[in-house]
Amino acid sequence: MSKEYTIILTDAEDKALSAVALDQNEWIQNAVHERCRIAIEEIVAAEVQRLLAEGKPITGSKDDIVLAADIETAAERQARLEAEFAAQLAEKEQQG
Image 1: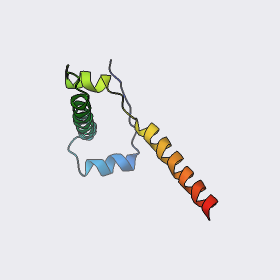
Image 2 (image 1 turned 180 degrees about the vertical axis):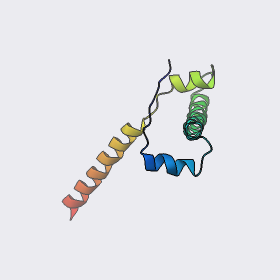
Image 3 (image 1 turned 90 degrees about the vertical axis):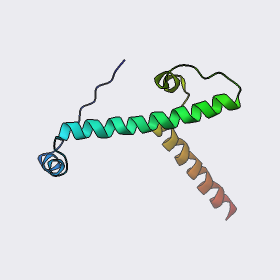
Image 4 (image 1 turned 60 degrees about the vertical axis):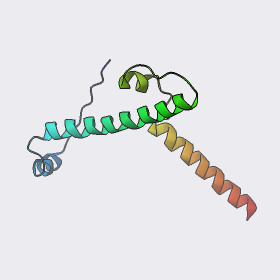
């Protein structure tokens, strides 16, 4: 399964990007794919360490490992951190 995303640039953004990129679309594609590659490496490394610690076999490709991983999304992490911060604030208000 693949996903397709669309990006819309204003004329000013497009002109500005043309100042640093020979081909805006190629630059955008490269930036996104490189960030995905880095995230895949991070997830695979964490999963390999988790599986080794649990004595479980490591099987499949990097894509298979990522797809099977139980990861916290950025949205989930943001919500968790906001809830933790709110709880800390509430605790401090109760103490003082």
